[in-house]
Length: 338
Image (cartoon, rainbow, N blue to C red):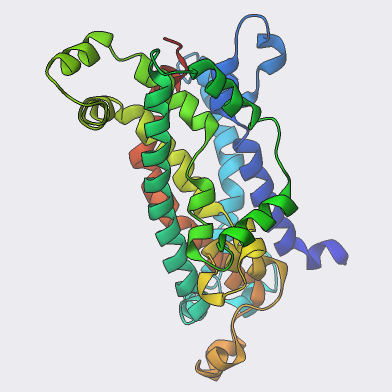
């Protein structure tokens, strides 16, 4: 009795769990692998990448089956989102909508919180990514120069911040002192710099021929001109890789919204989705009152949740293919030490 009743929730949690498995840090694991730690550091992602799909038909079949297993939870959500809510509650909707309907998307689209979340999330993703790239790449350029005073000391100081942190409460008090609470900039300023991304970009800059820098200096170019007009155009693969990391992180972030803001106009799309999954509330009574009675009677909380998941996932799925081709190249070149 219990399991069939909570099956929709189980499927949502399965989707999130599989997403976590796929996001197992492939880039970091592959970059740090060497013959000494290979046996203990090999994961499914790195194995599949190394073996590829050119070995034999058996491997192709295994990879295809693995792909279908990973995609099914998302397809289950998509099928449920296009199914009538009242019909979906009967069960049995596993692969294809049994009673095709767009009513769930109609309900989602009239919820003003969704559009507020979209605006805030798109704004923080664009602004946060641009600010992060600008600031982190400038620091990376400085750290890539051997003539930087106290370069090693600064480098190790930055490295310490990757292993030690002040904790949530001191960080909250710091943001309060700076006046960033309940402000859009609480999404931007704390994420302007990443030591890991700085190391990746810095190592990529160090792979650029030193003769290019020397020629520019002889022509009278300043360090900022060299950085902006020479190094940045030559570093598109690693910049695209970091853009993908930061952009996806900004898009998926909801914890900072939940902790550092109380203003509804600053609510992000992911926090709205989190509330949708956690609670039974999907739209206000006032907004429900503006819908036809027949429409309200044919929807269910579960299918509306599914529709919200699909709507919030589509934008990042559209952007990812354009940047994915730079991912491996940017990681590998950025991981080489000059």
